[in-house]
Image (cartoon, rainbow over all chains, first blue to last red; front, side, top):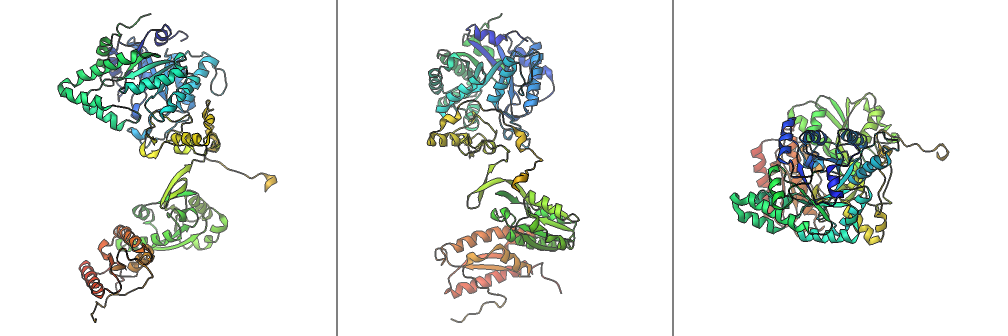
Length: 307
Length: 220
Length: 112
């Protein structure tokens, strides 16, 4: 519990980190989690477990995290403030820590309206920044939110997300500064296709000295088809998908789509790797977990360090 | 003001079908302003119900009358006597009005004829929008008079979130991102510094139900 | 010009068709009218600017309410004509009379 997580070790030693993502199943079958975990063994330093992403009910992040730990992988538990109030959040975090989980990614979460239970009452007792602050308080001050002492304090490695492509653009780095002030140790960005815009954002980040205060992992994702690229461009708020991605995917045709998607992903990794202040990549190959290995391999990121 | 929307004729018929004598009671303050349940709406609804039930072959008597405000005893007290003649009252007041009328007319069944939506404003002719969630602890001094508790879908206090795009909320292009609005106004007023720092967690217990406000003994 | 229009038409004068409200029209049907016509000025010639446009929109809404109540939407209609258009007036009256005859009497009329 007091020991540093693998991800924390990798980043603090100055290694370029690799994280991947795993979406839990829409059912109670733990085997499905373990099968996905096996596809990601040894290709990433830690693996995100999503928390009812897009407000669709899936197996809980903490339970899934324990299942992948049984397979020898290190989890990053994603936690949203959409479904739980501060009582449940602190409670779940204590449980996660007791199970040996240290990496926690703080998110506000997609609104229930996007999901499969749109009539649910949204909680949003806190926002993601206040959640980070809460984790920091528990770890560093050994206190609950109400100031009471916390015995057996957890050793969280606190993560947050950043979206270089949302508006207003000139406020995004300022908001990142707040996340760092609130305790973020590492950042995973929204998926990058528009490398130029990401580059501009990183320039703002460096100008504010934020790259020295937090580890930034660039988010990337292989596109499976032209249709998927078009969908993301049109329907996912906060995503910037330039036309060249769609054009290349269309040109690749049905047969060559997957290969082209991986190729584009590897190219983007190679570009962002060289940007000053980027300390790793976060590869999101949702429902295509077996693509992560080939991507990491082609981008020269394997083997992953072992401690 | 409180804004509501009239329930559908079908729903109201369902509620009243088992009764013989019904009084439709309009409310002439907020409900008249948002055209959901004022005197005129009460007249239209009562006529519609009479005609609809007659065509259905259902024997029911429907009368209408309206009061200035259903949430004030001084206006609803006069109804007490006459209410005994009816076996149900359909209140077109907001939820508070329905509750108040039900408390006043203890021997009568009181039904709601409108769906109360929010505390809001008239944005333009025929368009009303919510502005206040009655959270109990106003923070509008920190957000240049624009409320993120009411207008941010996720009640974010350090917005905008990563879904804000082109000034729109991620929920719908038709909904403005309230944090974009806040930042724009703060820029205009030159008070961007108010956005600095981390805000403490909201005390939601300040506005939770049930609650009361009592004027101080000295001020009465 | 001496023309006849059907005797079943009762004319109610209003300063502008825009003055006609849902409550008036429903009232007419509740009292047993088989049909209701709202006759407004030609579009563009309203003495009060756009009262006849408002009336047109209102008639659409009221037709919807009539259907909810269980009456036919065709029992209500909006016509535009000027005061001098006698022939149009007769046409309107005859048209509506024929239409309403086809629909049958108002089911709300008290049977004797």
